[in-house]
Length: 179
View 1 (cartoon, rainbow, N blue to C red):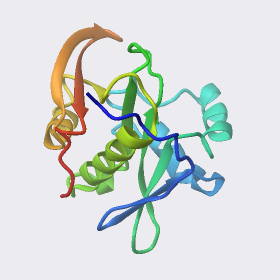
View 2: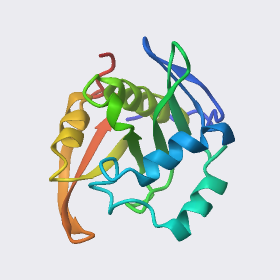
View 3: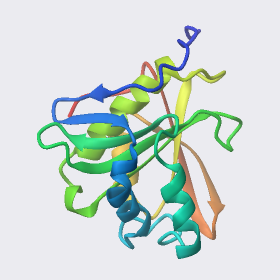
């Protein structure tokens, strides 16, 4: 039996040993635009956001509930983003999504940030489900490894957007924090 989650404590700032995760701000538009348009970042997400949609993304990302800009503790450089959708398209379950700039890949920043946000969401984002889910393309081996490294378990496979997808899930007992 799970405990009742606290009311959503948004906006909030989270910290790890190397990172600060804070609400996205209008001044982050340059870095977020890179996240939306970089072909490598968007490789498993349907490609770069189309030019005609980019303006809407730029206008509406700042102060979006549960959207964290991931910054380095030293220097406050934005390295990526993590978001919790409090009522995803999958039976209204909490869903985590993330993107990081390529120059910060392979250093454990995404793992650190995603684990911190999932930990926060399990307590602070109300849900009828005791878990948080994530969906990634099966071909995205790096993302699958990241999700497994924080304790997420593969629970489903399906085809969406003409590609095999993997769904992962974790609850409070299974979550692994730290680097």
